[in-house]
Structure formats: C-alpha cells, structure tokens
Image 1 (cartoon, protein in one colour):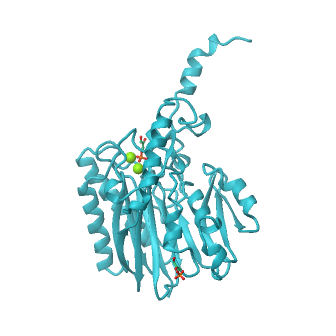
Image 2: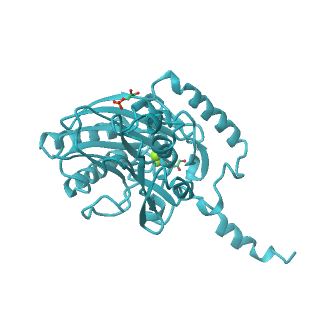
Length: 364
Ligand code: 13P
Ligand code: 13P
Ligand code: MG
Ligand code: MG
C-alpha cells in the first residue's frame, strides 16, 4: 500500500512582526493534527515551524491531493488565524488567499509538497522548511543533490544512482511542466532552473526505478494574489539512501549559503542560512533567509523523529558565510544586486513615483 507524506504550510500570523510563530498557534496546530491521527484520517503527523510559517507534516495512505487531508490543513490554518487575530499577531491569516476551501489547497495560498512512496525496510526522509525565501529556492540544492557528482559521490560510485535522475520543472507563470533527464540533458535543465523565479523544480525522480526522490512546494503567493502578501517560504521532502542520495549527500547541498529571493519585504537577495530549529527566527532585516532540516525514519507510516539535522557544527562555516554575505549585501541598501531587479520586486513605489515625475522627463 503506497503511503503519502504531505507537508502543507502557511504563514497565518507572525510573532513578533514576521520573525517567529506564537506558541498558542503552534499548540492549536498540534492539537488539530493529533485529532486527525486519532480519527484515523492520518497515520501520523507532526507540526513544526520555521520563522513565522507553520508546517504540518502528515503521513497517510490517501494519496496526493486528497480532499480530506487538504481540508484538515485548511481548517487548521483558519482556526490558527483566529488565535493569531486574538493575539493581534502580525499578518494574521497572511497566506489564506481565498474565502472558502474548494476541494484542494492548491491555488488557495498555502504551499504543499506531497510525496507518494512504497515504504522500504528503512525509509530515511528529510523535510526542509524555508522562511524569507521564494518557491524555486530548492532548485540549486536539488541540482546539487541529484545531478552534481562533486556533491553526491553516489552518482559516480553507486550502481543505484548511476543512471541519474529526471527533474520535473514547472513554469510557474505559464502553468506548464516538463521532464528533463540528467546527466544527458544537464545543460538544458540548467537553462531553466538557473532562473528560479520563473522555473521551479517540483519533483525529482529516479531513472532506475521511477520512484520520486524529492518534491518541493512551488506555489507562488504573489502570482495567486496578484500582489505582495508575503514570501512563499517553501517546503521540500527528500528521500535518502539506497536508490537516492545518502543523508549526508542531501545535507551537503546546504554547505554553501546560496542566494535566494526574499529577506526584507520579499524584495532582496540574501544568503540562505541552514540553521537548527532554535535559530529559525530571522530577525536581522527580517533575515537572513533560513532553512531547517528535520530528519525522520518512517516506520509503517509513523514519523520516527525528528532529528534537527542542521544542529551540527559542520554547518557553522555556512552560517558564518551567510552572516558575511548579509553584511556585504546590506551595504548596498536599495541598490541591486541586494534589491531585486524591478520586475521581481514584491514592493515597489515605481508606478507612483514615475507618474509623479512624468512631466519632468525630457529628451536627451
Ligand atoms: P546506502 O548504501 O544505504 O545508500 O548508504 C550509503 C552510505 O554509506 C552513506 O554514506
Ligand atoms: P514572510 O513571507 O515570512 O511573512 O515575510 C514577509 C516580509 O515581508 C518580511 O519582511
Ligand atoms: Mg509573515
Ligand atoms: Mg514566513
């Protein structure tokens, strides 16, 4: 019987500002999923957070896009929003973009990463949670894990990985998808996924077995809302070992603090800092952007864990690098390449300022 891991997440109110999650909102989430486990809807579930985003990590046997699982997530976010409103938390209900649930969480604001699997004798998975960053942020780490032999030794020396992986890439503006295989179509893949604001890796699939090795949430809040309402702060799920990269190869992809879109007002590039959960409270300039890695062993659908995988000295250099890059980029203030290019900016005064000054421009 295939199982499904569904990670569904939303920002439903920040404490303080956009920096963290209030314990009362967290408790409400935990109680809601515990009830769903008790009722038999879910096999197991846990609730976690990164910055001001609530992540529901749910194990069940109902498949992807299950209406009842999605409704549980939606109702939990709606109820959490009520708690956030009472406490006057910042941006209560920020990511809930529609008035009512209509069968699927997609297109409603929250992000979802769902992975169907046939559980192996030992099934290690890592759930990644981002804050102050955009859908597409996992493009580069996924490429490192599944296509770069300098990151993943198994691509070279393990029979199980040697055939490579196929990447399902989504064009988030045109709502189209394509499968691109590696290593043969590596350069074609990079033409697209090197531009993560437009092309996001949704899934990575083993070419040897067809099994899904990784999935990320590619939901773009600003495209759904038509305006800036907060950053996507994506989630990802990655299976490890055996036919997939080893745990250490998956985590190795975060030993560089890659630049991502997000940071203050969702309008700046900043370094993506891998942190332990206790440090996932982006405060400086609402950043730098964070990523947390929760490791689980799945045992008959039960989530054994989590282990806080970035709570490890070997990521200290990446964190120091992120702080150095933040210092450097911050000195640019409102100049690119700290500020995003105009067409990527979530906030802009450009139309209003341009309109005000329009009569003062003259031919050169
Ligand atoms: P697997 O053979 O289980 O993938 O483990 C590889 C390994 O030794 C991890 O570093
Ligand atoms: P969030 O997407 O985490 O709410 O951050 C929004 C923001 O504008 C931070 O400055
Ligand atoms: Mg927020
Ligand atoms: Mg957030």
